[in-house]
Length: 546
Image 1 (cartoon, rainbow, N blue to C red):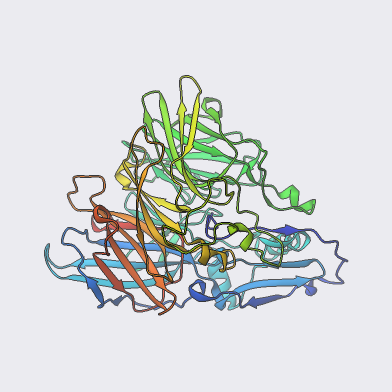
Image 2 (cartoon, rainbow, N blue to C red):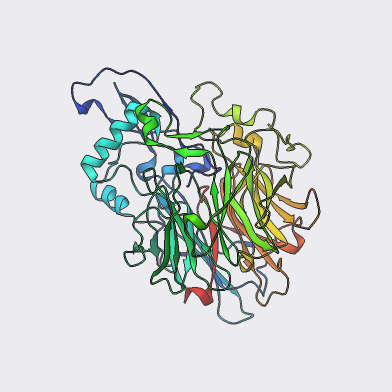
């Protein structure tokens, strides 16, 4: 979900309230907790040309659109309620989705670059509902006291026919030359990549009617889209395979989970789908017991499943692994009898977030407070909320599992690779580097003070890593890899990312050469307005976008 690594989503504590005389005792208010570059911005209207570029956009950089999704709460802030049932409040990751796009065009092959910027909200069904009302409608149903959350579910359902709003703020992806915005509490919305207008929900011609993962994967060789959806009622986990042309669901299976694992990502290889079933779960019954909707059981079972592309629950080969929390996979691939899975792993979950009012977020970073320098941002392998890159090697013939952390220096998240290598053996991975000190004082909202390039090599206990660190007080979001025109090597290209300097309040786009990763950006594009921090980004080449 959108909360992955950026914030800690649910905390439900139980109080024994008295019964209100009427439901009017529930009132909404606008919170002022949004600060710094997490605060929302307004739509700018039409695309505007960007004229301030330091350095040069390379000649072999492709024309296209760099686009990022993120939270941008309506009506200037977050809502909260207080009643005799207790309190509930929205958190930043529940803000309505806003797309921020940079358009790279040129009139001739070697001509001058023209760069434009635009932003626009994703107009989900609930967005349009609240815009029409001209005021907030949905009561907060994520964080707060269990009775207040339960009542919010009931009242939202009675008033609007749904228990919570649709976010569409997490990612944007392409399939069959169409573009979609997504957050996995609902269906994707198709987007006009040129105007950023929302065209409507995508339900694969009626074949998919449940939440849709924020990280679908294209199967290597066939270009079919592998998706999954979780839900807190049975069936807890369904998997789907969408045709390469996006017109039909060619396969769908209930994987017969016995719990709702909070699974945010899915992996593919040439022949298999890779499924995560880890002990971070969603359980509505817990709310009735006054417990957390989301809970991590560090003593619970954890397993990774490998299933044939069009398999069912009985065809999955399960591998027991050490209990941990994984939101994002880097890549998966086959190696003879083995399937190799790489992802960002922490020993415990940052969800639900702590209930203590004193130092409620600093506890996540104890022992890790540091600057974003290589020397000072080291952390122990045993720190429970520190995200290492982990490699699981799963032997399909013997059932043996090998697992190891392959990074130590930084807490790393929001991974990306050259998308040509999804499902295939890859040599390189790129991630955002958590600035632990800045994150510890930002009310649980992670900030990323640099980028990392990982070199994956066989038979190495710890992999080589290069770092591109930003100036102090500058943080990024939505980094993605852009492949060079007519590239020869896997790392022929650039990592582009939105950045924001909190001292100058200036937002930029960095273009970093992947082959000269630690050097200065080849280009820095200063944007005409502030771009808040967000989630995942993507680059859509013009030959796709036509």
